[in-house]
Image (cartoon, rainbow, N blue to C red; front, side, top):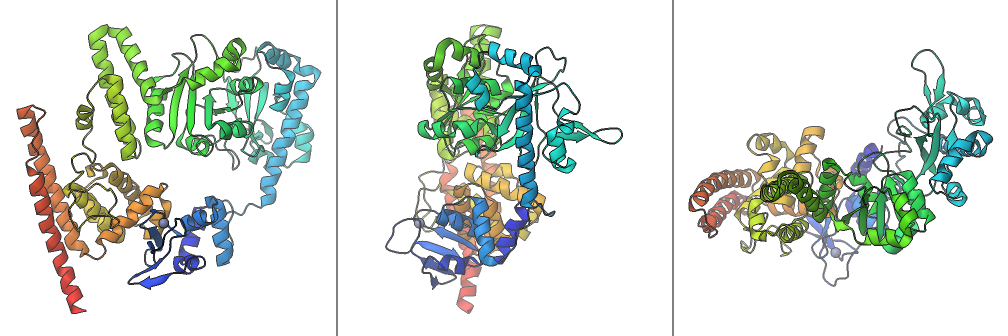
Length: 604
Ligand SMILES: [Zn+2]
């Protein structure tokens, strides 16, 4: 929806005058420098690059595009930054991609949903709602909770909503858009989406109704136990969270959020005063859900039924744990109990203990596998199989998304304790992300000019130069991708960046620098991209690239040879004989890369 507006702004707003509004900038060479507005300093380390349309601070690493600057400066979310920039540039923003949707239409949808909610509530309280009321009472819900969550009832009819007051008040178009009615497959006319269901309104963070979840009325023959509204411009299943509007305050206070499986579990938790409880809609927790929740919480605890969590759910949790910057834990219900039954039995205190005692995702996954395999095939072989599968699970999870190096290191340390395997063995097993390369700086040619603790060493330098060149000269990618893939990047952060870059090239074509860094979601990757591009732009790009590629292909060959040698030796005292030579060779390549550049400087 905002993709067009984003590009429009990036093309229209110049970063230098924008930043000059609040920072006194001086020209220094190709760049502008000033005192960083985001950390306290006496000597300027804040730079603005007019060519790249990006800013970068050597002190605090704040970096990015005009959007990042306004978001940081005014402490606003992207959408507001977009509006601020559009206003100052005199640009009218298109709404909801291409077709203009008047804010009146959106409001009409919200009004229709809210009217439908009232209608369902009335049906629930009418004589016809006796069955539904009895069902909830039996499950232990009191009047206050039912009212608070605005539980309703859709009658067993094809058109009671359509023919009732809601259908009379709102246009067919609005009702279809709001996901309340559907056109008939055959012939003319429309029919109600929800029939013969107990209705739970789904709200956004601010408490506006954006959709419904419906549970079949007991005794119904409908095979779909739960049905959610279709996706609309208001409702996105992989982002929406049931109960967040009411849980928000308690989550912020406790910094913990518990995620349960159903609407009724959330309601019961709130009834007992455990109000930092929400549920996601549909099946699995997504990155977007995590993204929403971690604005409020430092720790997310998923509550699974005993033994019911399938392998896919476990894989998912481990992946989220590795890739998302938030603590994720798992608590399991005692055998045979649902969360709402548990609350009725053990009360709030028991529930809070359960959440507080949650295992972290790594431990949970390990125990789960160990239990499964030991049960299946006796002690030793079972243990071995479990270990093998667990390591595979970790490897897959890591491949599933960019994993922060520190987080990965911490995870391996944790795994080492859980499995009782030395951490060095794990590092070797998963490849030495930065391990081997660390602690061997190449003087004067470090990638980050800031001298911060970045991985160095031949391989890292070569990989970072390839990316740097590609960022500045995207046209070269066509050639590079025939000899190098994302998988060839050994460093995880570089690989994460390369992956976004490769995808951009494949799907959207050659990236314009400021659009590219703007599209990066993590601040760390933004600053990395700027550093990489900066490090090579004074060099001869062609020579630098061919030097780096040659180095990488030779090092690949060497590592293949080393693997053979290592297997032959079969010992822990691997001697990295060629590391020195690698560095020497690289310095040589570097010199040859610089030579033409020096000549050019000499001429001008
Ligand atoms: Zn700074």
